[in-house]
Image (tube, rainbow, N blue to C red; front, side):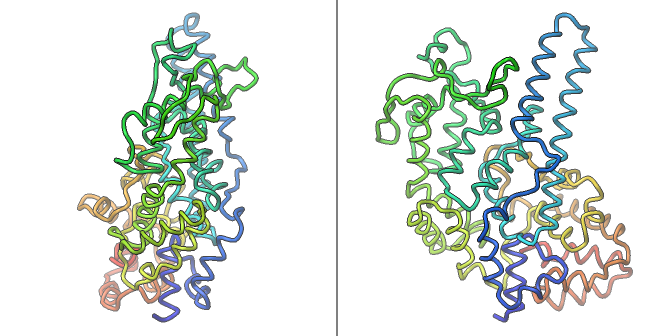
Length: 455
C-alpha cells in the first residue's frame, strides 16, 4: 500500500477526518503522525475558558432548587414556575456552551486521533443529559474525567468516573442509602443498584461475569458516596462520603472478602474488577469494533486484551497497539460513520460556519445522535446497521443539500473529495459526481458518496 493511501487512512479512520492539506502533510510517516499525538497528555485537554466546572454547575442548580423550595409555600405558582424556568435555562446555557466548545475543538484540532480516543472513552463511560440537573455536568464530566485520564490508567478512569457528580446523579447513586446503615433504618429511599450494575456490565467485566449478589454487595459498598446539595454546608456541590448512609460490615464480592473500611471499600472493588482478564477482553472488543470492523478479528481482540493485561490497563499503550493493528490499515472502509463522525469530518474540510451554522446540536438531533444525550448508559451504538437505515440516509441527504447550498461555489466537489479522501475515492464515484447539473448538486453528492460516508 502506498504512503498516500496510508496517509488517507490515518486521518480518516483513526482521526476525525482530514483538514485541508492534511493527507499530503502526513505522507512521510502516517503511523508516526498518529503516535506523536499520544506523547503529551495535555494534548487531550480542551480550553475551559468560559465553561462551567462540575462544582459550579452543581452549586448553581441545587442552590436554585433550594431557593425554589424555600419560596414554594410563600410565592404564587406562576412565580415558582418562572424560577424553575430560570434555573433550567441557565443549565441549558452551560450545556450549549460545552457542545459548541467541543465541536470547535474537534473541527480545529491537529490531534484528531487523540480526540477520537477521547470520544470513544466518553461514549464508554456515558453520562446522558436526560434531566435538567445534568445539563451543566455532561460537558464538565468529559473535561474533568475523560480527558485527564485518557492516556493514563483505566482503573483510575473508572474510579474518577464513578465518583464524579455527573455519574452519581445520572445513575442515582447520590441518593442510595444502605438498608442497615444508621440512616437507612428510617429512610424510604433504600439501596440503588444502578451504578454498581453499570460499572460491572458496561464499564468493566461485561454481561454475565457476575451474580446478582455481587451487584447487591457492590451497591452496598457504594452507599455513603453522595453529593452535598445544601448551600449552608462547607462542601456544598462536592462529592462527599457520609458514614451514616454507608452499609456497614465486610462484603463478599466476586469471590473475595472486603473489610469494612468505609470510603475505600468501593474503590478497592473497582480496582479489582478493572484489572480482570474479562474486563481486558470486553474493552479490547469494543476498541477493535470501533477502529477496525463491526465484527473484529479475534486475533486483534486477543492482541489488545494482552496489551491491556501486560500494562495494567495503560490507555496510552492500548492506543499505540491500535495503531499497530495490521487490519486497521486495509484500504477498504469497513466502518460506516456515525452522524457525529460524518458532520465533524465535513466541517473539518468545509469549516464550522458553513456546516453547523451556529447550532451544532440541532443537526445531530435530527440525525439521531444528539451530543451528550445517548439513549441509555450503553452509549451510542457503534455498528453500521445502527446508522444506515433508509430514514437516516434521507435525513443525511437533506442535511448535505443544505450544507452544499450554504457553501455554494466556494468549494468545488472535486477539491473537496481530493482533500477529504485522497486515493480512497473511487474513480467511478468521481465520474458520477462530475456529471452533476450544478456545483451545489455535485457537493451534495460528494458529501453523500459511499466513500465519504465511511471511514
